[in-house]
Image 1: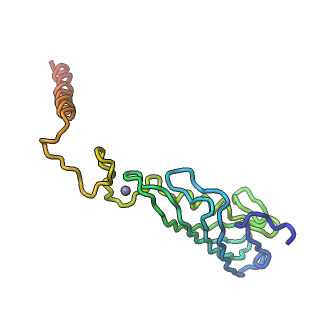
Image 2 (image 1 turned 180 degrees about the vertical axis):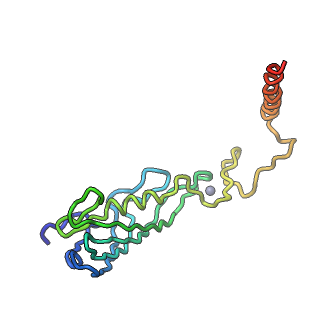
Image 3 (image 1 turned 90 degrees about the horizontal axis):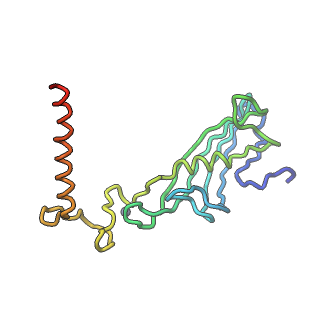
Length: 185
Ligand SMILES: [Zn+2]
């Protein structure tokens, strides 16, 4: 097909273009050729991103509504357990028939390029601090094993350095009160 962009997220809109009220649904299942996301969680190369796109022909452009699903991978920031993170996100954007000041996106050669929108939506939905569980207790600093229950905080096991810190804390409390007393005299 002439003019077909190599980008798999570019959709031919010829059949809804300039046809007010015309609708079409397109399903895309694309394998990524590079990973998406630079954080702890990302969608890896080779993962499939599925997008259900609804195209609506409007007076001044084509309304593109997309539901995206993908699976990101990463590791729990507390216990480092490998994670598989489902990502469900959507967007809606109007692609103008001719480029305008107000609209960022426009139709080119009967195609709408959804790639930057799909990618941005997915990347923004990735968690910055993925957890295997909200209550994950992380690793035991002594054994390196994942903690199954909170560490025992009874006073006999308190590190002597904590006692020193506590003493410091109480000293700074009293010193903070001193200048106030001075001002009054
Ligand atoms: Zn964890």
